[in-house]
Image (cartoon, rainbow, N blue to C red; front, side, top):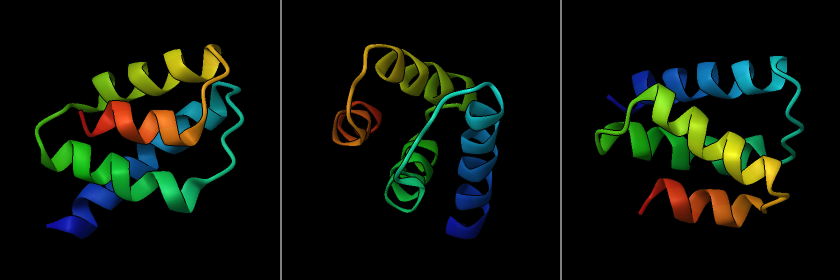
Length: 69
């Protein structure tokens, strides 16, 4: 259920941090990432969406919107 999705989301998040992305609002983004996973997006897609928005200097709000589109 949702704990599994949150766990997967945390893995994706941690990998982005390891790759050098600075992400401030973990607590805010993890639920959105978990929801995106539950809605059928895969980890690779989520990683790509977040990386692209961060490289553009985009906000966490923009990331949330993109994930839940």
